[in-house]
Image 1 (tube, rainbow, N blue to C red):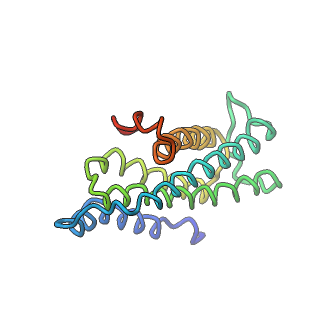
Image 2 (cartoon, helix red, strand yellow):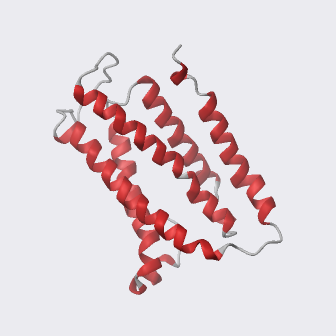
Length: 182
């Protein structure tokens, strides 16, 4: 079996993430003040996530449904395809996968700011599942209708990180972020 298809490294990375955000990080923060000075780093992170997710959303749309002749009704995975569009899609998926791993920082920022209530089971499970799905797409095929979920996920991330970013720099938007988490 191709070493790229072995999930051990991704599983170890996800287990380390779970340990850090659920056990190690909260232990480290016990008795410490929240790290509020990281707000500019978080704002930069949020802005970069908006830009990257918009880029990936448009890139996947262009390579599939808009110009890649994908069908909205039935788009099977072609495990044998090696044409230029498929290889470009696979390359795009690789970079998207790395950005999804960087999403782990979102939760680390919650821990460092002592917002442990934001580190819910659903939040952590979502990040782990998305990373495993990214690995699966790279290992076994990144085309077919799975791409639609990636496009939708990127769209949601554009909205979500815009929501997080705007209150940092635009005073009129500060009131919208006082309630619940998206």
